[in-house]
Image 1: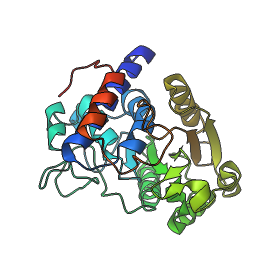
Image 2: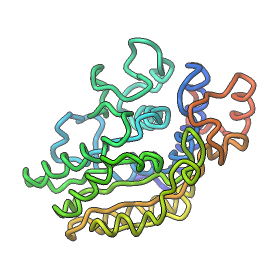
Image 3: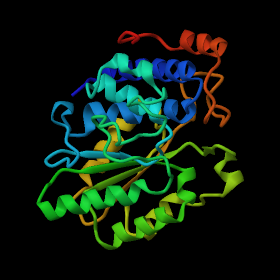
Length: 282
C-alpha cells in the first residue's frame, strides 16, 4: 500500500509520461488520460489485489481490471509500467508500428496486464460482467473493476449490460464512469445529454457511489474503498467520478481540444514546466 503522498507523486510522474508519450508519437489521447490519472494510480497501487509478477489472462484469485474507454492508453500504459507490468523505458515505443504499446490495448502482443482489446466503445462492461460472473461460478471472491467514459454511455450495449448485471445481482463488480462531461465532438450535453446518471444506474438495480472530485487523490481512494465495502451485498456498484479532462496542464484542462490531439513540442515544454518529475523520466 502506498501513502497518499506516494500516490500523488506517482500521479505527477504519470502525467509527465502522458504528455511525453503522446508528443513523441504525434498521436494519442492525452486529455482523458490526464483526467483519469488519480483513478488509475489509486486503483493499481492501492485498491486492487493484483500482482504484476503473477499476471495470467484467467485472473484467478486476483482482482481484474477492464478499461472500456480504450483510447486513454497513455495513462494505462504509464501506470502499468510504473507498477511493474513491463519496463518503464518501453513507454518510448508508444503507438509505434508493431510494438506492444498500441494506440488501443491489444491482446495480440501478449502485453502483461491487458486482458481485452478495447476502444470499440460500449463493449467493456459486457466483458467485465462476464469475468465477474465467471469468478462467482469458480468460487473466486476477488473483484472485477471497469472504467468507462461518460460519452461511451451513449452506446446501447452499455445499458443492456447494466440491466443484466442488476437483474443477476453481479455484486463483485465495480464499474467507474469518468464523468468529465467532454467527448470528441463537444460536451456531453451538446452531443447527447446524460441526464441524471445516478438515477439511471439505480433504476437498473445498481448501488451508486459518487466521487465529487476525481482529481483529488484522497477522494478517489476513499470513494473506491467505499465501493469495495458495498460488494457482496446483492447489487453491482457504479462509481460516478467527476473529473476534468486534461487535468494538471492548464491549457489542456476543461476542454475537449486535447481529447485526441497530442501536444506540440512547444506545448510539451509548457506542460512539463507544470509537472514536476518525481520518479524519473524514462
